[in-house]
Length: 153
Image 1 (spheres, rainbow, N blue to C red):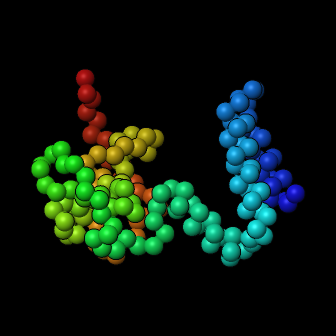
Image 2 (cartoon, rainbow, N blue to C red):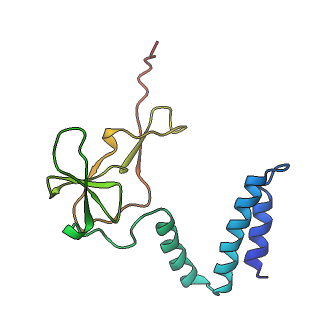
């Protein structure tokens, strides 16, 4: 067993509290992935490269830029304004209206906090415009809103 597998097992064991069967099952699944990765002999550049692609795939993020080509779109029902809304097949968080790439937007572009970064939320303002080719970002832009000192009471 490789040093990576032993180290990962030791780290994962720190997550198990009492008889937490769910955590034990998740740790087993994770360890299987670590073992397979270790068996492949990755190190240095190849490990970093493989991990960057694996992370994007597991996060449902495309590994190459979206093109905006017609083959990338699916029609979806429009519930708000009656326009023809389409969703990108390669990234479900990208939409466009009326079959027009100039109207494309990414709904996960921004997250907001109104408590100094303790909690985060999305809203309609989370949308950001998309220009093709479009590289879907790893994470949304984080925006801390000014606390106005006003209470909802």
